[in-house]
Amino acid sequence: MKKWFQKKKSESKESTKDSTKESNENLSEIMSRLKKSSDFISYSNDHSSNPLSISYFKSLIDVEILHRDILAHISDKPIQTYEELKAAISVENIMITSEIDKIEKMILTGFVMIQLDEKDNMCALVRAELRIGRTVSIPEVEFSVVGPKESFVESLDSNLNLIRKRLPISDLQTKEIMVGSLTKTRVAVLYLEKIADEENVNTVIQRLNDIEFDQIIDSSYIAQIIADNQNSPFPQLLDTERPDRVAAVLAEGKVVILVNGSPHALIGPTTIIEFFSAFEDYYLSWHIASIFRMIRLFAVAFSIFSTPIYVAVVTYHYELIPKELMVTLVTSRSNVPFPPILEVIFLEMAIELLREAGARLPTKIGQTIGIVGGIVIGTAAVEAALVSNVLLIIVALAALASFTTPVYKMNNSIRLIRFPFLLFAQLWGLVGVVLCFCFFLVHLIRLTSLGRPFLEPIYPPRWADWQDALIRLPFSSQSKRPILLRTKDSKRFNKKQAKEKKDIDE
Image 1 (cartoon, rainbow, N blue to C red):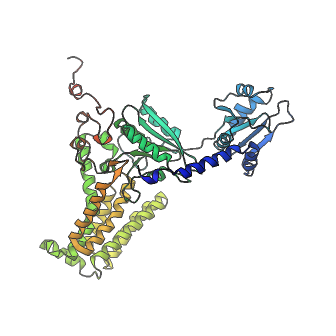
Image 2: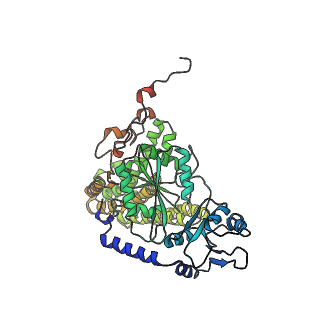
Image 3: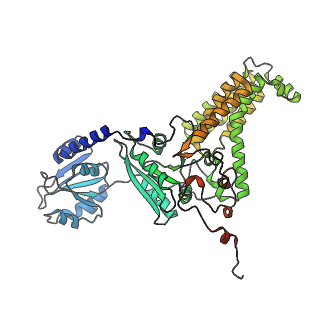
């Protein structure tokens, strides 16, 4: 664990003192503070035969539940004790407590507070939460032609339901943690008890408990805060919106983090190879899936190295260009007044601007801007002799190749690291490209995900984990779980029995 994850003793003492002060605060002071909000309702029916004090936030509770399941059962019945109140209301989640901090917390999360005596700190808390959220829809980021069409939503309970439907076993454990001093966000840690390594689970839980931040709005906050190296351009936790992918990685022995209000789950520990593997690969035959993976890896390499190599070769190593190609290249650059590096930067910035404009504008307008803007700007730039035809083709292919990355956050990393390669290529040519590659390679070798090597199985080389890395072998060959995860049960199935395929008439 890192030192900055550990809480200081002085901070813990101060927090203990603060909690003691809060507990000393009486209920009347809490009520006076809550009444400052215009959406807080507090009234007493003193004129009825059954005087009660009822308080709630109208923006947090379901009015239908309040009138149908609560008020309709207590308005006409004589109630003298809280036990009678609890028996009269037909709602499951009813708490009778005098703890001030719990009362305030429950009211702020959609509970109705009912008091028999306003001067007393004792009250009953009835759950009447208003649940607003979208229904389960198809994946938008990780869309697949083959396979399930369900994706996570912003409700933590709904996301847990999608996972438990796929893993209906008692070994699936969830640990819920409240994170964020202001937002009080519910964060759930999921793992299979008999498979997942306890060290991975404890690492995640400890880092979540040690978060000192006021607001946690989305799972992306968690991914950045608990990352092993916050200064790395590479994501160290895999995020996904697919419940089927989460169920599969849980069966492998990984740990999953779900955040209330976020439609994406975080998976760890992970490796760099997984960011280039679409989950649709497992719904295709292993031959086709392996070819698709190799195409993605080649496309990523082309996206990173194509323009830096162009700058290096044209600027320093033009003798490497074949004579047949040299004529075409000289012709295309004959009227261009700028050096290759300025050409590339101009086109790369134009591509990035089109990407951002297409992503931020409404869908129909964004598609039009991307297509029309690319054609108009590219044609105009060539006709104005600002860039060459050859470079325009290379940059367009590099941009197209970068879109083959299945994970959006890794796609952003690839977009970023092209620019250091361009700078090194301009300074030292191909030697600079190799030098920059060595820098990133050393960084990747040192990078970890929840303490596990990020570059595995490439480094350290673990040949057993290559069965689902650059290529995907048949399921019958994947009888062992990844060594990286150090699972309690490394065997998935009996390989010998799986190979014995007997028909019913044999």
